[in-house]
Image 1 (cartoon, rainbow, N blue to C red):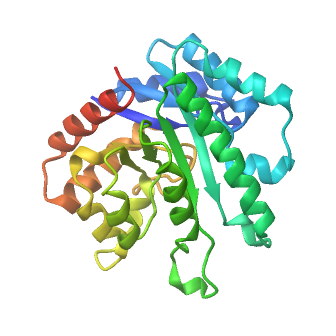
Image 2: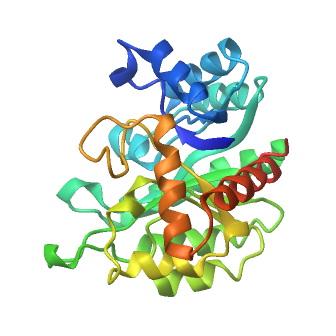
Length: 276
């Protein structure tokens, strides 16, 4: 049985067939799904999905792009976030973090400062409620688009911040950090990684291939990030939780393991991380 630790089933792309998508997920061998909050609206919808479906759980949080879009947030919004975080079946704060990509627009130092302050506010909430944290982290693209990688600054900034919270547990979701950063993050006992369909795009010579090989299986969970990051053989299609098995198969292939071993250990990791 698999656990999809990061889904966005509340996304409008599922409006026409949400019930069927959820049914396919559990029929395909998923045991549980965690639906992720990325704003106040999606956090509310995540809590509602968790209330409706026995094997769906929720996180609540404000994605860094939420702050880039709104530019501010009020005490009323902070109180609403905390109220949602206290709801039944909320298992983590997230997805929260830093995103320096900014879709080609200039990212100023003030933008970064605002993101960091908002990130830390939510980490304080996680500390008060004793909840683990799902991290979104994306770096700026280098000037050369052929490089196909992210600049490490956002990752380094996230790591510097989370070191202030040794009592919390963190997962880097849809992980895309480079090998040097991965080795640094692996030194932190309270950090693990969830891998998504993007790892199925990697060729053997890519750095991400080495990243996956270097992360111990005991530090890996599965993550669809649906409707995004569809794995091969569904790349280009809308993603859904049932497809996490293809990510598991790629991990097994990369590490020279049996798929059943990846299924078993990643499920155990998720249950331990979310305290089931």
